[in-house]
Length: 197
Image (cartoon, rainbow, N blue to C red; front, side, top):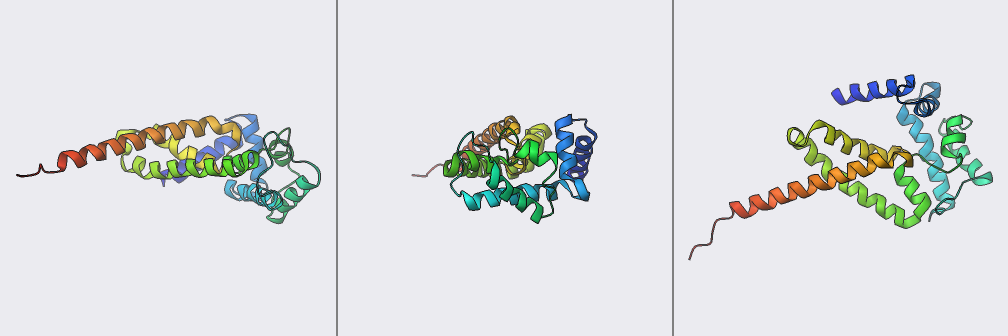
């Protein structure tokens, strides 16, 4: 319940512009027509799937999607009820650079199969860390736990501009995994009875 309240509070801060004009515009565009932020994200994923149908091995670094390929992606946005004419899609997704607002998809877009493999590795690290963090919330702390959860969100739903948060989440996750692995190894060795002769 607390997590849902916190998420709703964060969305309201984004809509009011408290976190900056760019985030406000992006949030308002995503929620146009009464959609939730997740429903707005569905439109981004629809565009991503359409691009993947056309170029399954990615596009390459620095490529900008334009012309007919961009129109195909925007058509997919309209199909799922997204506002493809919103400045969000024209400026942030298909603007000066292509940013599909999912770091997982962006890694595929720019680096192909290698990007997908890196994304899967990041997802595995985060998925392994989340249960350990939640079970040891007192020891690890709420801020570190939040950073890891935000990184998991960012992997699926945030632009590459937020990669600093992803990096912080991965570093904390790796530290948590190493510490908990060391602790469990130490318990294993100290609890094993000495062999009798």
